[in-house]
Length: 130
Picture (spheres, rainbow, N blue to C red):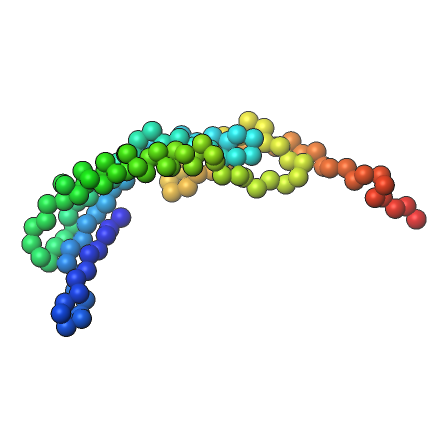
């Protein structure tokens, strides 16, 4: 995505200074553990390029190197820690996933699964027959 940087001038007007384009590269595998979505990210890199500038040339290589190092050394372990814990998938009582599979598509992921449904039985002491 694009990141626009603005400058506030002494007269308090705001003017665009430059625009950076950011690119995120990653490799993620995901799975379902009973009713929890879990993931593991093996690679994370963020780079920047100069899209436009109103203030002259800007070297973004140092910024790219720094942010990519932070992504690898800080963000990646945090993301994987969250992935180890996972996110609970809401399920209906009595529904069990059978051979769930995560499918990655353009901009989203889908959970594909067969299900086994066993309705819960109401205890007999709660049933009233009139």
